[in-house]
Image (cartoon, rainbow, N blue to C red; front, side, top):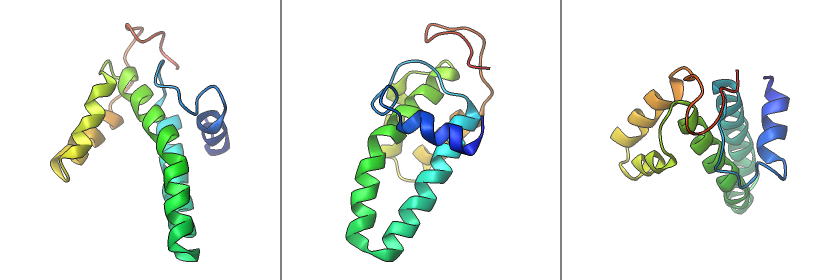
Length: 111
């Protein structure tokens, strides 16, 4: 999946608020890169604009994170690790970088 395809898929109507299914590593990381770059640029232009863009990208970011966890056979409830500032982020990064698992209860492998 390319950078543009990942961004389009995550921001599309059917995936904007979708917490079901599975997402490949490339889809997750390309969208994460997009969100970080857009957030930094908008915050540099104006702090309020950066906040608004961050809120707009919050739901698709949570959705693609949940789908990525599903791809590694984990529940979306694991997103709550973000509550722990450093340790939780490290745990989630470890989950996110793991390879896709074969078909599981969340659907067929997206590969």
